[in-house]
Length: 91
Picture 1 (cartoon, helix red, strand yellow):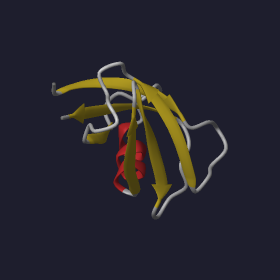
Picture 2 (cartoon, rainbow, N blue to C red):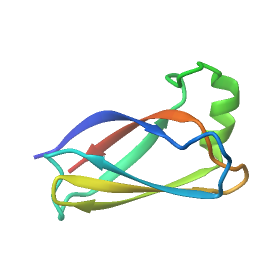
Picture 3 (cartoon, helix red, strand yellow):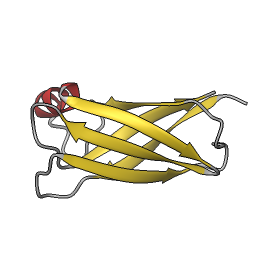
Picture 4 (cartoon, one colour):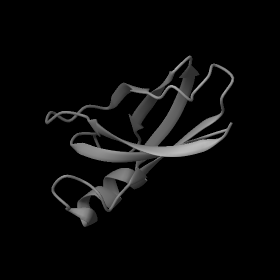
């Protein structure tokens, strides 16, 4: 079964170089291939210009588990903080 969904993640108010966030989704299995994308137009404060830049400098990687996946976020240029929507797809 393949699909897609969105989730809101809060990386806090203090800048950091890396985060990990677990997103619960009953459709994800340990054998799922999961891709995640930052939705730059749906931040809480709608400051799309700043968040487009922040999103462009992130590296996102996922680790699927049974009923969830862990999203690892590493800042390549900028430090990470704030609330974002993540669009993810699995197969």
